[in-house]
Length: 76
Image 1 (tube, rainbow, N blue to C red):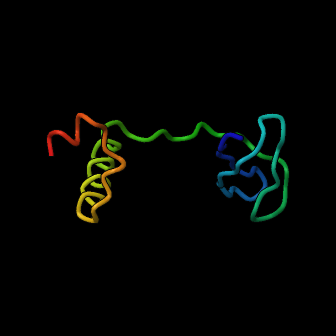
Image 2: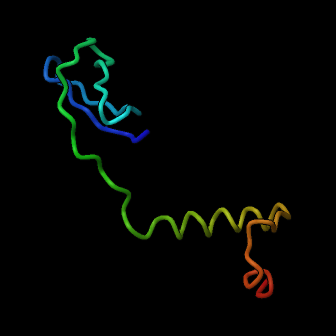
């Protein structure tokens, strides 16, 4: 199920919900189903490589090398 962003037209509350594309959730604030589906924000480019590098460094400090590929293990 995809994650959709909604804005309630009744109380102007914005929220995200995991729903099927054919379903409409109820507002978490007022319970209304008069919602507007919003365009969700995407993750900015370039952050995932930094996060992955940090996670791999932490795994190396803790002695867990199972998340490295064979070519990366040879460089260490």
